[in-house]
Image 1 (cartoon, one colour):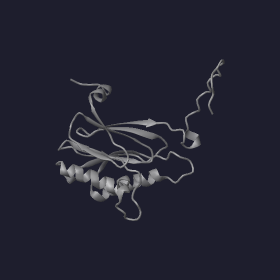
Image 2 (cartoon, rainbow, N blue to C red):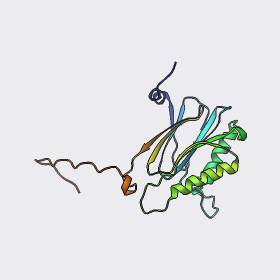
Image 3 (spheres, helix red, strand yellow):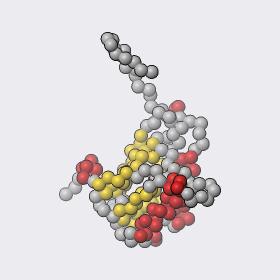
Image 4 (cartoon, rainbow, N blue to C red):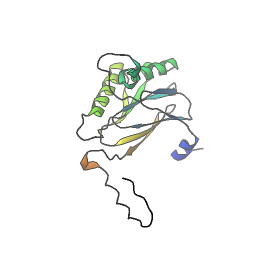
Length: 187
């Protein structure tokens, strides 16, 4: 029996991965989801063991080597946490493969943190000997990512944002016609 992707999501056990989190599962009914802007999510799995996981990090590193409560927001910690979680559940490092997402530049005039995040993730995985089999990084759109860790399937949806560079913003909605009679406008 086959199911359409929407059926898969309706039947799935959804695990939302937010900034600083990492989750690992081998359950074929689990789908991990996240929404990314300049952040990165790494989806790493061992296809032979049928186990995978996702993390979500805000910045490449703390810059000063600290390991305080904020460490979960940084890439080095998030990547180590995910890889160690996979190893503890039976994955083998030499069989791991990765898919990375995010790293967008969503705001005009700010430094491109997303590009730094993507470069960090690529370098970290290369240094760890984990091949990147797929990636979608950069650009000016936010992303909604869904990852089925047991199968390795990933679905990404781009999300338009109003703060993107001027030449790629979605058009402003047309103003609503003014209504008459007792309505209150708040500014």
